[in-house]
Length: 477
View 1 (cartoon, rainbow, N blue to C red):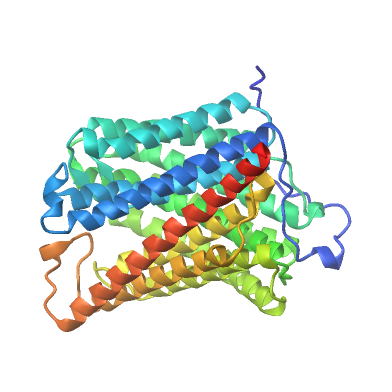
View 2: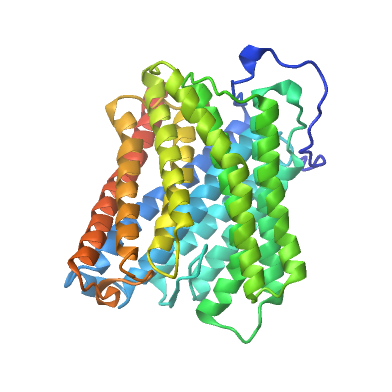
């Protein structure tokens, strides 16, 4: 079996004829057939299983806070246990799986064995992490970026998933296609996908450097907080670049003329990528446990994202406003695109006003994370028919992004409201110490929005599964 690799290429060839003006604003990728599509379908299956598992754990979150019912759960503090697995499935596994889908379509067929091994390891790791709360008791550590259950089964699952992610990123780098502006919008999107793989490689290196340097005397939350801080920050560049690719791709898929040439877009994406290389400097310049190390990584993330997010976000919104209403198959895509831009903008705006450690912090990152999630959901909708499934359309498919987005907007508004009263993060129940009517109302709005968002997430799973079943029924007819 041929597992040879070609050299990674993310360079730009500023040669060749300038694309015709009509193509300057069109961004799309052709979906290959054969082994690449088969592997992409495998990553899609893992992504959907992660969302199903995340939805089940969100229900367990509710049950764990319900008097009487929580006595039937396997551990006394099941709220934090369920929250750990819910976050890891809905953020880490979901994002990596959709990245695997996109990188599989972007790369060549070389290293197919690596691709299958990466998918297998990530699938096994996901299963172990999801089963861990029901098999063995372990303390929940609410570390930023990757919370964990500090027990052997969950950590074994996380290590297996991490090994699969490393293989995925390495294969994505070594099978990346050569790029050039002469390819127009396709070249810009491929550059964005390759840049996301590069930033993921920087994140992996940061995790490894943190593991080697973290003080052995630390344990629990302090240990995992330092371990995941640097790599977690670098991963945000990966998710942001994938979101920007999604915005541009969805805008063109809905017929919206994006008023940015591929050349300008590519330069913006390159600027967003450059900021991730502050990460290795932060490791060389400062101790990983120092305030300076943490502050520099935070600064780099804010600077790098803003370079490309604002102009590309404005461009896709302006293009969508100028475009006519999309056809039936395009309506869910536009709903996902616009709700994604709205949620990410809300999360970014909240981040400007963060002061202290309260629930405004999760309001900020929930807005940004959900903005990325909605963009990836829209891409899944768009790619389903090209992967051999049915096209999501109809009222439910169009309602889903708006319902999910509206619920999450209510959720973060409630958190911002409560944060103004100083309500602390990462606590639940009596630990929240809600004294005033305003605090109770804010957290009530948060809870209602969260419930609506859960319905929106479950509706996404239902719409995708229905599209898959439609294709299966047609195939057997």
